[in-house]
Structures are given as C-alpha cells and as structure tokens.
Image 1 (tube, rainbow, N blue to C red):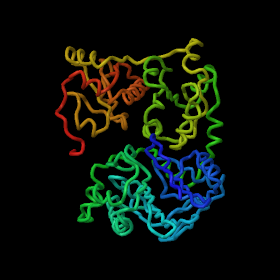
Image 2 (cartoon, helix red, strand yellow):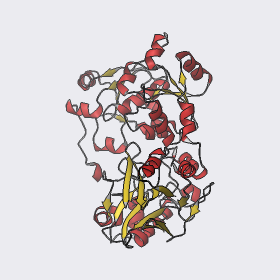
Image 3 (tube, rainbow, N blue to C red):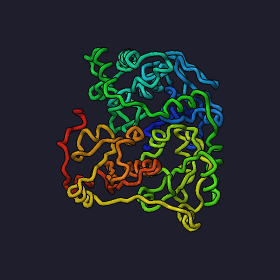
Image 4 (cartoon, one colour):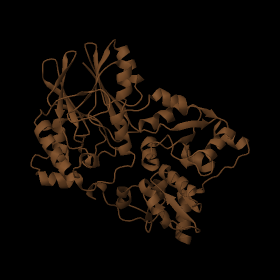
Length: 469
C-alpha cells in the first residue's frame, strides 16, 4: 500500500495518491493532472478511480481532465449532480482498490454532497479517512458556502455537520489517520493547524469542534462565529467543478502567446483585459506598466487573484519573470482563471526599451516611516487581515483590509500623502497597485511592513493573542 499526500502550499490543498497491487485512486486532484499520470506509470499501475469529496469552491479540481486521460470514473458522494458522467456513490458503498477497500461515508454539512472516504487495509481494519472539507486538523469546514444552492441556512448546515461528525467520524478508532483536503491558510476554515496529517484520537483532544460534551447548539454557535465573507470567486469554481471546463493544455497554449510591446499595448487598449504583473514586489515598486495590478508569484498568488479579481472570465495580460510563464498560467487555472490571452515578451525591460511609459511606487524604510509619522503625523493605513490588525497595530492606523479594499476607497486622502503597510511588504504593494489604478497616487509603501515597523519601536496598541479574539 502506498499513500502519498501531494500538498500545494499556495492553495493549502492536499490531493492524495493511493496505490495497491497496481491499482491507483486519486482523491481531490489539482487541475494539472500529469503528475498523477506519471506517478502511476512509475508504479506500473493504472488509475482505477478518481474520488471527489465535494464540489470544491476554492480551486478547480482536475477530475474531468484526469478521467478523460486515464479512463477512470469519477466518484462523488450522495446527492451530487454533476453535468458529466460520474458514479454517485451511496452511503456506505465500497470500492475495491487492489488489496484495499475505500468506503464512502456521506458526511453532509460543509456541503450537502460532502463525503469522507474511509480506507480499509487488506485485513479489513480501518486505516485512514480522507475527510475533504468535513474535518480539518483543528477545525471543520465552514457551513456557509452551500446555503444558496441548497436553500438552507448556515445554521441548519452546521447542525447537519454536527450529526455527520458525531455519527460517522467520531465513532471511528483513535488510531485512524486523518488526511484533510486543506491546511492552515485556506479560506475553507478559520482555525486550522499547520500540520497536514494527524490521528483522529489527537483531533478528538485538540479540535474544538470534536469535544465529547459539546451540544449541538454550542457547535453551531462556535462553528458559525467569526466567519468572514467567502471570496467572490468561490461560486464560480463550484460551477466549473460541477459542469466541467477546458483542458489545461488548451489554457496553456492560449496563455503562453508571447506579445511584443506593441502587440501587448494594443491588446491592453482594445480589449477589456487586465494587466497583471506577477514579478517580485520590489521589482514592481521600482518600475511597472501604468495601471497594472501587482499580485506576485512569490506569495499566495492564486487565492489573492481569486479574491481581488473575482471574475474568472476576466481576460488577463501578464507581465512575468522569464521562464515563469507556464507556472503563472497553471496557477491561475487552478482557481478558474483561464482567460490569459498572452504575456509581455522581454518583460518590463522590453517595454521600456521601446520608449513606453512606466510608473513606480514611493517606498520608504520602517526607520523613515517612524520619523515621518512622529514629525508630520502622516496618516497610516493597515491592509492586513482583521485578526492581525486586532491583535496589534500602529497607534491611530486605519484598518483597510486588502480582501475588500474597494469598500474603503473613500477613506484614503485624495491629495495628502499617506502610508500603506501590511505584515511583510507583499500585500501592501498589491494594495498600492489597486489604489494607483483607481487614480490614487499620493501613497507611500512601507518596505518590510509591520514586522520592520515593530522592530523600529513605533508606538503600538497592546498586544492581544489572536487565539483570544
């Protein structure tokens, strides 16, 4: 038996490769499927099943493409209704994989079709669960993502999730291994551990949602408390996972069209395409195409694209570091952004060589920030998340979280200078690019963000541990 967790940090997502006696099952695959095909070839094995724990909202799964390429059927849990051919398993249905058995446990609550797959060893002993978004390490799946489609409230979904956990998962033995679909950083939960594998017994001790003496009412309150609005691209990803999508090879072929500066500028001026610059933030600060949006590959690239651009149909023109073209387009496709129409050949240097206009962002050190704030009392805007800001922030700094920056545009001065910062410098440059694209140019980025500011001894609010908020 071979079990491999294929973890993608940018999405905080875990896909799974299971092999026994030359037969393979893939659980919750990513959009690019060749790594799974290659693994099977290396093992002299054949992909027999593709299991989906639910209709994912935060990424586009590779199930449709993988099924076409491998010939393996897609398996969903009860109540799923995809637009393509699939096995809709009944609760308790078993699937043989070599010497192993995979049993479908219907565990609705995160979504109504959510299903946990129980892996049994050759001797029939329960070995592991692949829990999707039903059970995370330290948390459970948020119960608000499916309510519109299911015509059900998040409280009712939470009650359903409570029953699923108590009746299907918690009765399993403590030594059963838990393999979740996501880890810390995913927007599908709010309190996930940084670890990506654990035992069920430890989760019964550590996970607030699995307390043995917890009432259903307590569970509903704690699971629904503090939920932030889901990113706007989530329903669009669900639609693609449910109805199908283009092969990633087609997306790559279209997106890797190299454009000269003249062709790039013409496309930008004659279409509704966004110019998305994915270089390092320091490069963008120094020089970029006017009105382009920065979201760098070196950070949580795909989730931020999804959260801030939102419309997966939006055409994109890319400014990309040389050699990173395929990576950028692949990562965009993982969250459903298949509309890349080309990239700037030769990058920003070629653009400037042709004599075309560039822009820049004023950026200062934390030491200069400290001095200027103390002397001139220049306004400061903090674009970190709610929890980060509430835990500790610069005195008198206004909170304008990046995730919904457009709602705060009226707060920024239109003429006087102001500072913008995040935790380390990545998100503040994203925010600066958005503000400049909206005609707000009187901003100053603080290089190194809150970490550097704190080291300089700038006056702060009293620290509050995030776990107590």
